[in-house]
Image 1 (tube, helix red, strand yellow):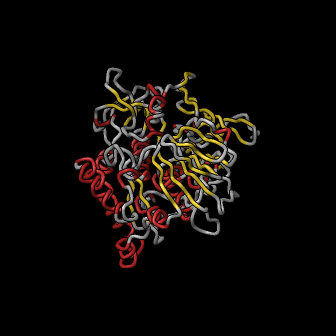
Image 2 (cartoon, helix red, strand yellow):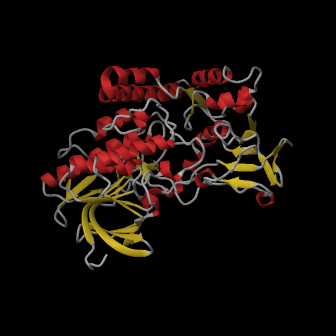
Image 3 (tube, one colour):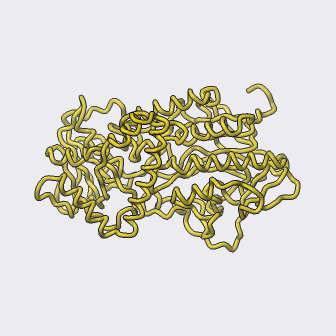
Length: 497
C-alpha cells in the first residue's frame, strides 16, 4: 500500500469462515451503503471446514440449523461432510457478491480504538509487511478456536513411540494408514468421526481403537432426514428449509431441556439406543456410560450409527482406561493392557482463542478481556464498536451468529438515523459476574480464565436458548428498551438506551 493515509472502511470483518461470511451477507443486505471488507489470514475461505483435513470430517449439527437462515440447505444429507459445507459457503460468497470483499493472506495483529477520532486503527500483516486500515466498526467472525495449535496433554514416553503421532488439527493429507493399527485417543466428536472413517474408502486401517479416559454420550442420527427431504420435495427448497429449520430448532431445544430436567430417563434412553446397536453382551456401562448427566457436555451424534457398525464388525474397539505411558510399540494402560499401534491420533481437544489472538486496545491501553462483561452476547463492556460472534454450545453454532449480526446491523441503522456513531456497553463495576460459558467440556474449562465474563441480569447473560435470544435480539430498538449500552456522536454527550 503506497499511500501514507490508511484506507478507511465503515466495517471491517475479521475471518472468512461461516461466521464472517454470514456477517458479510447481513452487511450487504441490511447496510448496503456501508463500505466493508472481510480480512482472512489464510489463503482461502471456510475457516474450520477448510483447516481440518482428517478423514470423515463432518458437521455434528444438522445443516438446516447450522446453515444460514437466508440460504436453504438443499443437499439431502442433514449431517454433511466438510466438502459439502465448503461448497455451500462458496455459493453463499458468490450469491452475495462477497468474492471482491474478501482479502486473503491478511492477518490482523492488533486493533486500537481512538476516542478522539471515533474509529479503530487495525494493524494487518500481509506477505511479511505490516500496514494499517481504519474502520468505524470491527466485526469478529473468527470463532473461538486456536488455529495455530490444538490441545494435547503431556504423555509419558511420547518420544519413545516408534510410529507416527498425529493431531487431527494438523492431519497430513498424504498419511497412509492402510493396513495399520491405529489408536485414537479421545472420545469427542472428532474421535467418533475418525474411528469409522479410518475403516472406509481406499485407505483402510487394519484395526482402530478408540481409547478414552471418560465415556461420552453418543446418539445415532439419520444422515438423511426423511421428513426434511419430503418438505423440500413437496414445497421447494425455500419453504422446505424454513419448515425443516423450525422443526430442528424445536427438536434441539426439546432434547436439551428434556435431558436437563430428566437426566436419569435421558441416560436410560441413550443407553438403550447404544445397546441395541452394539454386539450382544457388549460392556455398554463400561464404554458408553459417562459419569456426568446428558448435555452437561455436548452430546455426540453419529450419522447412521456408523461408530456402532464399526464396533460390531470387529474392526473397531473401545478401551476405557488411563494411559500410563507410550512405548515403542503403542500405549501401556493402567489396567496392564497394552494397545499395539502403528499410528496414534491425539483427538484430545482444541484450544480456545477469542478474537483470533488479536490484541485490542482503547486509546492506547490494552484491553484485558477477562475483565470485560459480554453485553447481549454481542459486545464487550468498555470496548466501543466491536461485535463478537460466539455461538451456542448446546445446539447449532450458527443459530446464534445470525441473530447477533442482525442485531448489530439493526443497532447501526438505529444509530445512523440519529446521527450517532459510537456504541459502548457500560457494566456496573459492582455487578456480580460468572464465567462466560456455563459448559463442562474440557476445552471450555481449560480456557475460562482467558475469557470475558457474563452477568446475572438479562442484558448481561450469555443465553444458550435460541427462543430467549430470538425475543431479546430481534426486538425493535428504540430509546429506553435496552440497559447498559451507551450511544454517542463521536465525543458528544452520550445517551443510554
